Image (cartoon, rainbow, N blue to C red; front, top):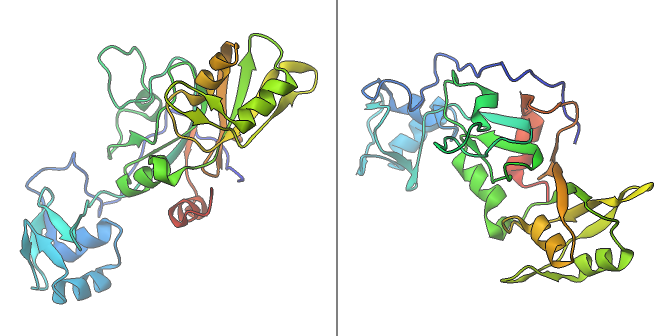
Length: 265
């Protein structure tokens, strides 16, 4: 997928006046149709139709009255799915080495959230995890449903890694990775393995769908190699093209639509 020009990490997320976040005043009041529209379900007009049909509940009770108002922290649900009035934000980051993929960690010197900026108007979460010293493409969002679809084991998404090893990788070991390698609790197979540099056989590219924790390192360790450097270059259709280490950008609308449709394996 084509990526746009990188945005320096000092940029902050800005939300419009119709956007409400969990950082907003808890008692803030707004119309129910706006709450629903801000959650991304539909337009305000369509939200009114859902209200009339009795498909919206507020704090466990069906609300059918148009013009009803709710607080930001009320439990508003559509077909029993809890809604959030936060504007949905999607960011791709080229993670550098030494950053922990968590929103906060008292034992970590640096987290990926510091690269996005602490003045963000919405709370973001990393989608999946990359080890502290693993670099590469990472998605951050406040869209919980999309995050679940991209990381849950039943929704395996394609990932491609550039792996630097402590010695040349043999062709037989690359074939073994495609057939399947025992990583301790199960056998995992890569989709494809190839030399990343024809002049340096200690560098390989690995395409894989498995979402097992530390799967690449565990596979190579089982085969007798030590991973010196690991860089994720592709994740669920997203690449880090035009993003230098530590830089990020918003996803384009096309990228968001493709991710939501599950267009990428």
